[in-house]
Length: 92
Picture (cartoon, rainbow, N blue to C red):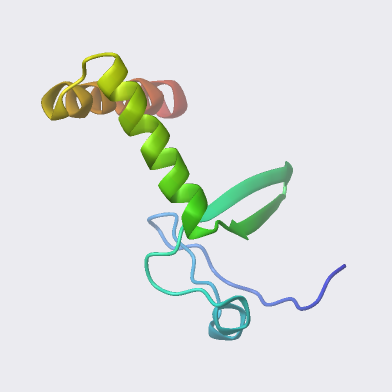
């Protein structure tokens, strides 16, 4: 069910602006987390994630890190390594 359509332009950094009327209608504010779903080759859907989802994921990650004996430094190093690997797979 299509409610509204607006044209936006992707920036050189790959960013786009969610139009003000959509942000207001959806209750989006700075810092909200959105999931981007690829529906087809030329269709993306944005979904506002509830704050509780983010808290749940964060709590799960914290528990798993503690279980594996990861401290803050080890976790930061693991994240940095994963980001490098993802970047290499995506952009090379």
